[in-house]
Length: 399
Ligand SMILES: Nc1nc2c(c(=O)[nH]1)N[C@H]1C(S)=C(S)[C@@H](COP(=O)(O)O)O[C@H]1N2
Ligand SMILES: [Mo]
Image 1 (spheres, helix red, strand yellow):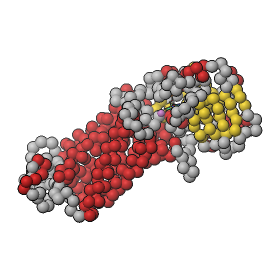
Image 2 (cartoon, rainbow, N blue to C red):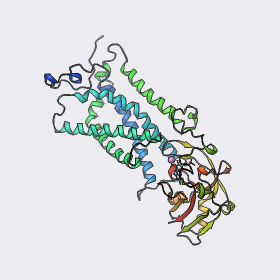
Image 3 (tube, rainbow, N blue to C red):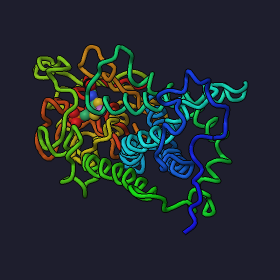
């Protein structure tokens, strides 16, 4: 059989480094693996392009919901949409980890290409590559430690993760632009690398790609149970089990951590509904419970990727707004007893405030709300991230 050489990842022939430097990775033939070729790199690049794009778009959605620009209106339906987009965000991020490691392994010899910089265009390409690699590693690492509840850094995760995403995707666009011809060749059926299979003993390229793809698949499968109901029993890697916690629902911040236990249990607790209204109201918990009650089946969908279905009962926010005479198109701010913290209040757009499923819930799964789920009263809205489902509510302000 005729053996055709695969197109190595190193674009030889290039000038050789001076003799005294031909050591270690600069030696001729320092990288002997025939799997480090354009075809391997192109396939991994294609997969990473897909996972990064999905991760980026779903990340933008999540960011937009939490910090909406004036033109962005997130709907309250379908009820489970955010659950799906955020599940995809975390799962595509996790799936990218083995893909990125394999890709870095495949292209690593290029780091030792000689000369290190050939001309201005080459220099620009190299710089964008360092931005891309640095950004990609940073995004996957910070995302991973965030879902693992480990915060070793001083910077604020969401802002940094958001801006690094733009920089990384910018560098990715430049990278795809400079490599499109190479990857076309690498992915084509008549690629010289494809014709070069099989060569020699050991793992084939198909074997390598299958192993890497399977590693991603296994990671996703072992994590996905934290949001996909059918995979729950496989949920071995996720830090949260969606069915473990008071009343069978997980808790991120407890009442004790939020320092609201005493205030929440205080018989002097009141719910105030005020702001741009005709008849402001102040209610005791008993009065709140005496109002017409509604039951909504709505998930908690945390930005960290886990989600848990739950059945809540309480007063429709819409009914309360009508009672106090709020304007139909008003935005509504809901505030917690919690004194500080980033998640002590939520501002709802009219679509969410008026959705018949949106409740000020006082019970969960038919029992009085556990204090860690927001007793005496918590907000629950369809198609919203968990961070906006404010607990221990004491004030509703119509804006
Ligand atoms: N007041 C207040 N409400 C809060 C939070 C908080 O820190 N403070 N955390 C939010 C987050 S991040 C999530 S995921 C949900 C979780 O609700 P649960 O604890 O009832 O599952 O509560 C949200 N409500
Ligand atoms: Mo959350």
